[in-house]
Length: 437
Image (cartoon, rainbow, N blue to C red; front, side, top):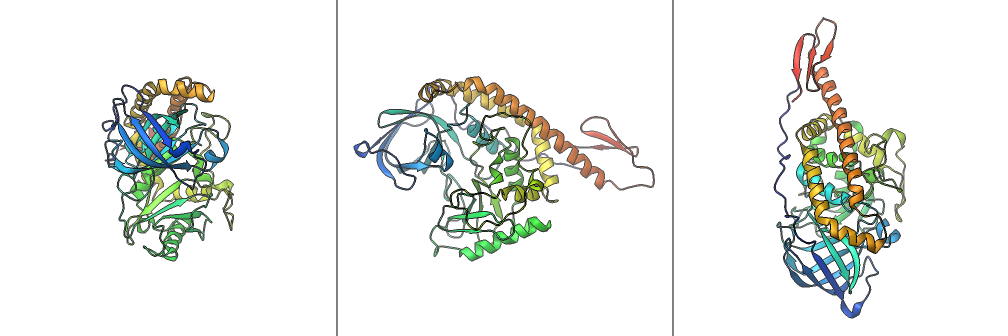
């Protein structure tokens, strides 16, 4: 019999922000009206935030530069990184100096990233960020509706791990950090964001050996509990699976960390859901679903000597396919996913989307006028329908996994094996009733 406890991290929780009143306005004035044209060089500026009823009104000096890879190179609406002079408490959480402004240029709803981060907070995914939309003006020019959120970095208000011995990693084919390596088994592009000083903590060789040991356990179906926080991994995979985020394919924007030299690898925070919800370069909310964790069999693990420039062998597919289907992960994932989706997770998420979109509406209208695209409110219905269909699919798939697991764990008898399903939670095997909780 399969016994399942309710996941502790599925509480609905109070909203971090009220989402009422006007969308906050952020004005950034650079020195001498200098343009922001670089992803590496900061420009000095003055920031003024009119917080309306949500955020504190702030005036502070700030450094600003561009951010993003494909979004910076290919889209006219740019994203930015901010480094304030003073710490600010924008989300009712930890004070922070480091924030980013996400453009959401290709997202017709301006909502997908916000919804994904909310889902991560609801699921208890590690280090999940917070969001609020702002109206952004740069040197007096209106640039559109932006998503303000924490910058992913080691420190309070983001990846809160030990600064002396912690390590922050990112899997990303852009492969543009000075400390980086290609892993030995799946040829993944692993970048070391922290420590950024080679003399500060674990040598790169030590980090690489720990990662390669983890990959070997994934490849051989060995014991993962010695390498990775499996509970955090399950919550992380759940958010990516629900939104069908295919950034795992390359991979791109996959963050994880070691809290200390003896600690386990923790996946999170989730990040970058532009290419999710059916988007594959043309339009969102396409069907059928392109499964992010079911395609490893389609791709060979390809050696790639240099990922510079965003070259991709799509080695993320076989790695995450093997990871998701590892015998220590798949049943735990199915339990978590099934419990979440059968206990109102989707309904709470859709309610959040409704509240967020209603609050965002005036800002989204301005953004549509600025960038000459469809208003976001016209696409929210398709987003909610897509998520509902996706949740139904995951619920069915996880139910089947749990039933198969329960049957496999049921002691066999000499009688012929017969299974009858009474409901989606109850089945009878050889005359004995079993319950999936």
